[in-house]
Image (tube, rainbow, N blue to C red; front, top):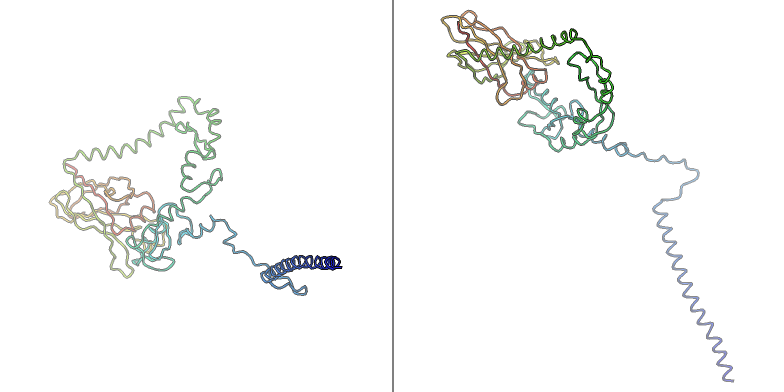
Length: 374
């Protein structure tokens, strides 16, 4: 009887242990289900409420254009000159507020302010600008030099710092000339076609008579250049030669509409007192409205002389300036009645060089005077 009771107890006890195991599994399943429900709830919170089927579809937000554009295009708009809106090709200047200007526009603004007798200002923020107040931005210059640009011949992209070398030496589509140009061949074409043209060029087979005509024109141009240098060498043989550094300072006329002119302090050369004067565009009314700008000057003898003083003179660039001046020799016979020369053009290459001179505080040049012996 006792054994039967023990078996019944054992039989009863076995189900109790299995029910405990099932309880653990059920709890684990309930825990997993709870975690999944929490994740779904979190996901639904992130995604937001379910859209109403009757509600019209919402428009997607557009990405900003700056993010969609290329990095080069965005940098182009940031690093461009505030005046010409183009990327600088050389030096970059900035005003006290950081606005950028390329060297050409910066010099042009200073030259315009000199012609208008106004203080030059930044076109963006209107703060004062000058060579003392503005400084170069080397970081922008380096950044611009690394931006890609397109070769005008082969249309490939290159960094701006290496584009000039590529277009002059490496590009196979760059425009070149025949090596027989010196004997009259007018051919121009891409570099990769040059060998084929030179192998078929007819100019090496020209007769001596035809070549002599071409060489005659070349000799004529060479003679003009040599005549100038020979004239300078002959002047250097004169007994009385004088030179000095001259400084043109800006002034204004007393007219109702004032005009800019330049004048040097009195200086002594060859035991005589002289003055130089200069004017812009032959004193036209509004030279600031003209794209083409020139400087002309005259030499004035301030001393009294007993007899006529025949002289040759020329102006050259000063020792500390980078303006390009082609030497031109002028002649005049000075006397008490004719103590001023006519205004003659200062032989600078173009309007860009003229703007450099106008933008400077003073114009520093070197004057040579040669007294002609009778």
